[in-house]
Amino acid sequence: MKRILAFLVAAVFLWALAYWHPAGAEGLPGEPTTVVVQPGDTLWHLATRYASPREDLRRWIHRVMEMNGLKSPLIYPGQVLEIP
Image (cartoon, rainbow, N blue to C red; front, side, top):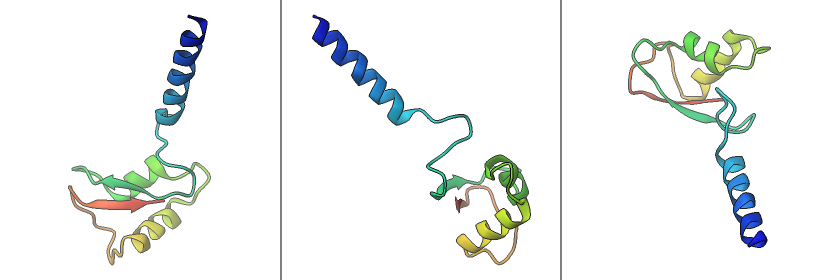
């Protein structure tokens, strides 16, 4: 019985570890994530939500534009963007 209980506790712990993300964190640091643009979103809004606190938001926006081949900072609802 103790083995089964230990196994279940370990399984739940490993499951939680695999699927738990701190609030706002998506993917690993340095690993791109995809975001679907929602109505009212702008690149500046996304930068304030996803860029690291020490990062220059203008550089973050420029990098997102480069990653997605955007020639303009205009984005549209439903658009899928890859972000750092």
